Length: 126
Image (cartoon, rainbow, N blue to C red):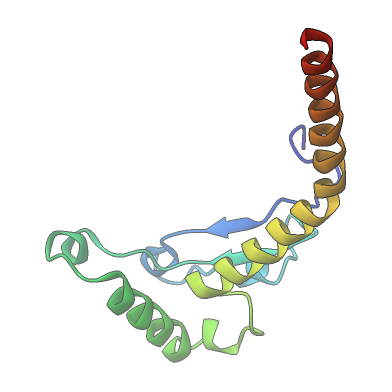
């Protein structure tokens, strides 16, 4: 809350969702019902230690994650955008774009101000 008081940049990420205890799920969190976040939550199935040691390619892991979520009895019923690394990437891209769009004019102004000061100083030095 200190770093993002308006909640415009906070996305909840629930990792290792595939190894939760039997009978427990993250549906309420993923539906943003427990601790509401403006940008919601995304569930992620990470590569297992075995996958990492066997050097599973990232693309293969993404396909396996997508398949796992699409076949899961509960998570497969989530609306789009709530599960999987690709959903997280999409959400992060939107947040980053909005942040850049909001601050780019200010950054350009600061650069122009600094440039003007440097040019003025160069004229003074001859």
